[in-house]
Image 1: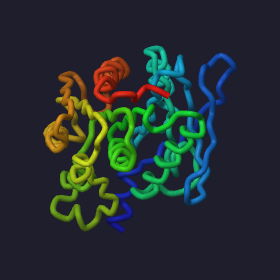
Image 2 (image 1 turned 120 degrees about the horizontal axis):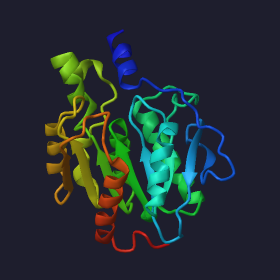
Image 3 (image 1 turned 30 degrees about the horizontal axis):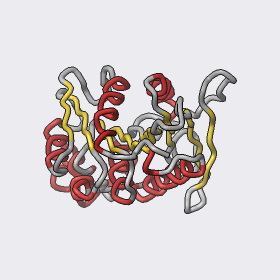
Length: 252
């Protein structure tokens, strides 16, 4: 029962669906399937020119992908394409979220981008909060243009220790152990973290950044976990900094 309760806290699963885009919205609804047969929905904002990279965005645990349409608009205005990936059990989609399930969802989104003509070498993985664990896992499997993590944790177990104390490893089955994986990420990496983060302590982000030699570490003094001012501008700035470190990353 405690394990079930903890999982419901990890995955609150907002059910907000994508709206139907108007003819001038600049994005389209993309329907695709996971390896285990679940039908997912994402939103694709094509890049303004074919030589620009596409951000594959993995959102946090208490929101839905649809909530990030304004962010996608801002990133496209800054010269990037965007794919807002949704998770199973979120946004009105079927399935129950889990660690392995979200990894499968991430793989499906990356594969769908390939079918849209965007190979991994042209993809920037961006993961916020819960989504940071998905981004790190995918980055250990695929060489992408760059990886940007926002409000990232070392592991969900470490976050859970603030609630469950020493019992956290016993009741948390979805580990998302980014700390043990991030050194294997070969793509350029940046981490953004608010110094006032009240969910994932900034010290946890510092520890994660230290585990990946060469990672860019950016502390944002005014940011909390759920209020990250100027996120789109910060992402644009960090992505442009990282891309020169990945020769050919934005070339098709």
